Image (cartoon, rainbow, N blue to C red; front, side, top):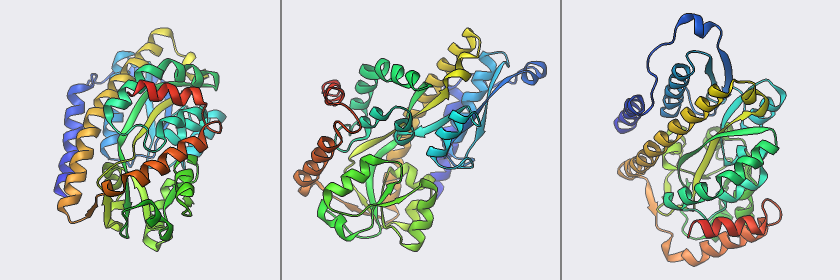
Length: 335
């Protein structure tokens, strides 16, 4: 585990250089600060939360102590569905979520997580640049402001049991996040039966073998300790785990204009700094898992079968989660 400990330390160290605002703010300013209550599934003390805390320091400095983030991490506020519900109810103000959580606010954003569509970081960058304004307006129309986009590594299959082709999943018990219609549809297209659980329930499900296969990045598998129960890892990824930070619209616009801009600016700097580190550490986590003896599954010999299942999934979800025109716009953006 030395690599993983060192990776977390490195992430914090680099974040300190990349994210401004490591000095304290005056006590008088802090006492009158507007507090933004922020929910996250990231484990306390993880690299993700260290970056988030660095974001808070830069925000407090940039607003001269008028605005600060208060984190509720480790799933203490429930799952992503609970995050969005609590923000809407005024029990939380903001949340860091995956595409699943973003999709609860703006359903069509789920197009970005459809299997086989965006598999490389360069494609993701082009899609975000081309469609950011469109998605931003969609979030606002649904009562939220998108503060930033985020990533959690390359999404690939992990399993306790060997697999190589789509039909192998029929004899396995693949997990599908209970609020994620995308991977559940992918599993249904293959002909397997998804096990629908919330993310905090996955580790227990692996322990009891209620499920034996999960879609996750190497980095997230390590952070959540799921890797300790898994024996096989796909060499190829079928997507990028995309996420972002959202805040209730009323909370955002209650801030003075300069502080709103500072919140957006620091959020963007934090996200882009985190992206660089996540991409590096996801690859390092993958390499380390290989060295630790996890079996790598090369799905390339059956690429046509995986691609066919992915294409059928995208077709099935068109008109249900996103429009044909939006799917086409993403396809054009990533070319």
